[in-house]
Length: 405
Ligand SMILES: C[S@@+](CC[C@H](N)C(=O)[O-])C[C@H]1O[C@@H](n2cnc3c(N)ncnc32)[C@H](O)[C@@H]1O
Image (cartoon, rainbow, N blue to C red):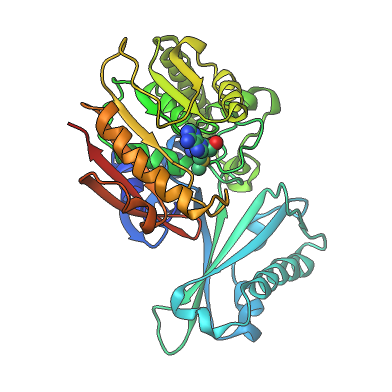
């Protein structure tokens, strides 16, 4: 059993916990922006491959107590670094301060540099050669978390974790071009998981942009692991995840074989799911043609058949459900003004009109909107069946649900 930490967008900690239920983690403890847990390394890797909600999964590699910046280096040198890294490995350090200790330090970047010094000094003392820094593709992307020590008396605890994937897990690999305001993939998946969509009825997004909700919906419906494209590419590149190049994993043949089997199983499960895709499962539209082109490209990158997606360029206010298919669920992220810089009055009118369009055109559907501005959402004259708060970066947003009779 080892200690791990999974991070996620704030407000989605419960969704992440629910998703993790069948992994049977022990000592699961929810905190702001994620949860700590204990499990076997193989089970943590399995979770990393399958989580749709987590941003990163970290493995704890050591901890130390210290009093101030001056004694951080010496204290961090207690961690047996030469057993953890090889001299020709690469690493980088980022630092995160818990709320309680934030006022104690000038900046967290300086603390990252001190941990780097501790690693370098240990190698200089014991091995002569030292691992080097790689900010883009480090084998050991380290996170130093600083919090009050449970020993009290003003002591601090530095916990060092290594990022197992080495990239933010929202990067599913299906996007080839950037839309101007796409929602993060793990956030979109988590929001879908909070709707009452049963995966069988059609999913609609009338402000679909680059189609993140539809793509994540298709991955959920067809059991396509969020790391699927990475797993496919791995066959050629060999290493898809940072942990595959980390010493602890390379020295564990008992994990490597089941990991390979797991990768093969996830690829086979996705291909089987995709082969069962049916016409008109997903419906997207946007007032602009360009983002729809991006959606189609991503759809193809995932290997999904074109027939399962209905798309058109249209004003969301004019869109109506397709009569050839059963009633379904709408989930959408209308323009919200901050990044797209729309005029406020126009957006107020758009939200009002959208409420009316939902009422008149989408009877028998459940609709879910992502809203950031209270001023806009108040313009929708429908009773909410769900209000959920979450953060998109630093922006506090709501997921609003409506049952349309
Ligand atoms: C916040 S973005 C949606 C981003 C999308 N969720 C994604 O993942 O890319 C809002 C989208 O609404 C579109 N839009 C703005 N006004 C519209 C309207 N009246 N009807 C349909 N689409 C509209 C914009 O072109 C933009 O792509």
